[in-house]
Length: 315
Image 1 (cartoon, rainbow, N blue to C red):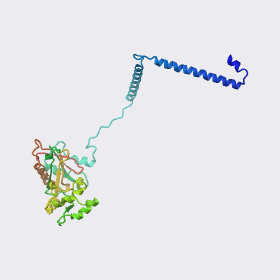
Image 2: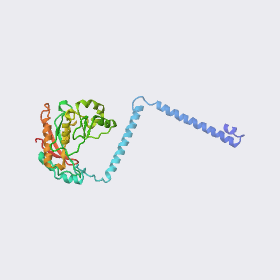
Image 3: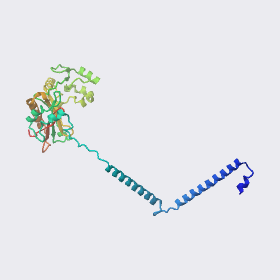
């Protein structure tokens, strides 16, 4: 009534504004009262028991977990109702190979252990590439390469050569027959540029000190001269002749396996057998005295990108 009396003598627009302001004030009072009641209800929560904040939060989390379980079960049920796509069986390693590989692999009897002679005859027939592939021997030895005396390393001259054309450099000023590059100054200039135009580097003991600064260039490539490999010697002419004749070096890797090429497929079975027999004899001669039990654990022969042939370890 008071409001009515006040607004009786004022314009209608002003009266409406006054009424709106009073309504807004009343609404704000109601909201503040509701917030106060909510805060009081939160304060009234017990410190422990079912009505505590922790218990209520745990109940809500459990309810959410049950909802997730139900949703997962529903999704699994829907997936089970859908028709399953046929799963293709995993193909074997042989099936994943090329047609040419599979064809030559048929000549190798699965599970059979071949003699060295049989393996060298068969390996010439199992090359599936168009170039003259290398014939390799992989010999698994019962040694621990971490032991200094079991880190086997040696070299030999293959009776029938390697079948490769090697470029030989001699780090000495004396002219040597058969060498492709001779001279300390000429080789030093190449090494300064970081270029390498040789496959084997032979040096005299007196000149080894001059090669020390190039160890980081030559070492990782296996070109650093070493007395054990016969590339550090006073008789450089003999070293060059042996390298041209087919001297090879072998060494066990970190897993105790020797990997070595013994010729080319074009050699034929007899020449390959002669080279392979020489390699096996050299490996047996290098057996450390500390190795007990089985020294040669497994031998396999193969060609470049060709199938593997299991070879007897007793030959």
